[in-house]
Image: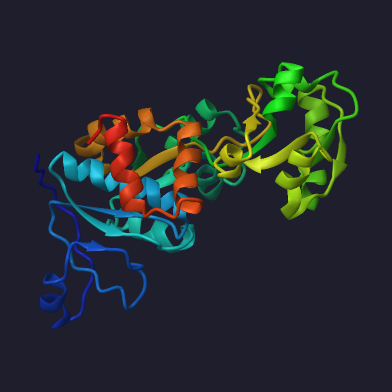
Length: 303
């Protein structure tokens, strides 16, 4: 499947145009780096970016291979950095598609937002984005703060949600030192869910302390590979104690309709547990993003 559209080419200087036109369409260099070596892309090419973060690159590679499988020409511009570096390239049309995280992206454009639940965040994000940008369907997969317990503790206490912790005596919460004063820390647990906890600033040893039983509840990012490798259970957060940050494709509006069918299917198939498993393949198994993406697409009948 091919598509055509009109957008501004990347600004290049004089004689560099001819040299850049010969460059390959798959580049992992930072497009904002003067040594990027990328080409002024053909108008039918979808340019996909990623953060300099292994999990984000895996998702971007899944997008890229899914689109290539559907007949699109794709250029990769991965490992760009943080939002201040790559959002201008999305806004000016240099990059077409980027895997993002709903809550953090909403806070970037609307620092005063009070939305926390996935649906509220997604709705407000669509209104907060600048002209020319939109988001496709969000995934259930997240990369955000979450509360976790060991599988054994969850089974012993019949735990599914944070609210199930209410009434369990002698709970200790572990996490970074600043968690003690964060709105989703001990005070938030009490106010939102009626859960009483002591606090232990476990910092980098949080998962180790949880597994050892020194703490019973741990603040761990929801896509952390140790959730799988250490047999942890992420507790559901139905009342929105944490800011939801679901994986969401950020796209230029002029290509959104043309790629939506492909990318929405990816988002529908990507689950919280699935994202953790992908990250394990990267950090533990040391597989490349390309190989991880290829296998995931095949396993989900999307290749």
